[in-house]
Image (cartoon, rainbow, N blue to C red; front, side, top):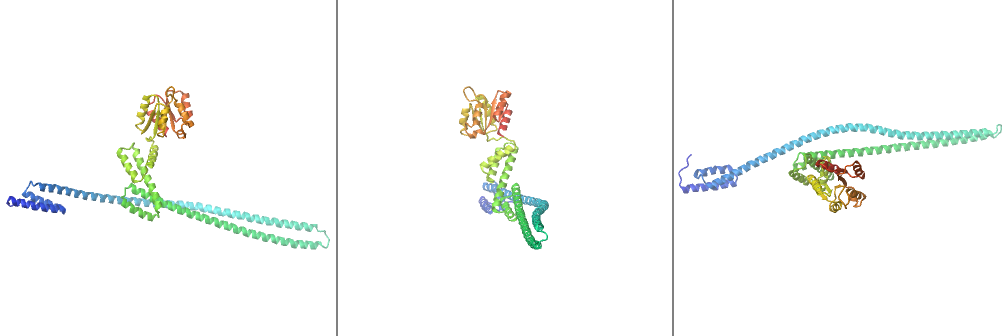
Length: 453
């Protein structure tokens, strides 16, 4: 459709009207309508700079809008994927829990058999003890009756035969003996009854104690299983990078399911955070020294998991030792009167260790060691005329001449003297290692690493 012939003033008026409508459409975010009006503006004025500016702005806004849609859809898709992965992992977890429960029940069944045997053994022990006590009472009763009968027979035999009083004495003794026999039997009956009561009471008490012990053990075991399951699921959420809001909702539900108190939650959370940080440190150091970018990432993790600087240092040292890596924070003191040796050793060690102190003699080294506590001292034996030798310096350190703290510091001697007697003497003194001169970079690094272990 061709544009009707208009005067310049009419064209200008229409363009102005269209641009105002474009501005209103942009404010209302009706971007498609705004573009249509700009096209109409071009029909009247193809070079209109305001239309060009509006068009550029609208296109940018449309691109931003599309980008927002894409980002929103990507986030939604990522959240759905995380949700699906969480559900899948939870399903696997509960399946594993079910298998472990079955395994645990089998183990508990075996334990129950052993406990039943132990309980029967305990019951038998009590019964055997009671049986022995009853046998002892019966034997004592039989012995007393036997003694009574022997005494009665002896009295009858002592009575003179043919006398008129013999029958009377014998009858009286018989009556007395019968009375004593009855007394003995009554006493034995009472003792046996008391013994049976005591044994029964002991057995009941023992069974009650065993029952309470088993109940308490089951309660502790069940509680530990709940805490372990809660810890496993918390680790899983960290590994999957579950969003904080979703993680909070899941943990709240799990706390109720596993009967986890706030104190237990804090303890588990702390242990999981430390464990996750240890894993992160180990992963970074497994491929060598972390890059600056890795260090920034680790610092962010440290803040996120609330790991103190002291904890970070301790964890890093432990991981590096575990991986066989040198401790770069170690403070190494190098003593040699030859400046070229000092520079060479310092040049090599500073590639790995942050704190390397050099000195020409022991006295200068002691001045430096007042400022910082060393991890290792490596000293030449012959430090020049008129000064303390490396041997003497080490002997004084071991003797405690410079304080108790230095006595436990690792010490390495180096010298151009390689005689077997010399080397053996150094080791007998207790030095950590002996480094013969001249030495290579590799032998120096190996010696230092061994000495710091």
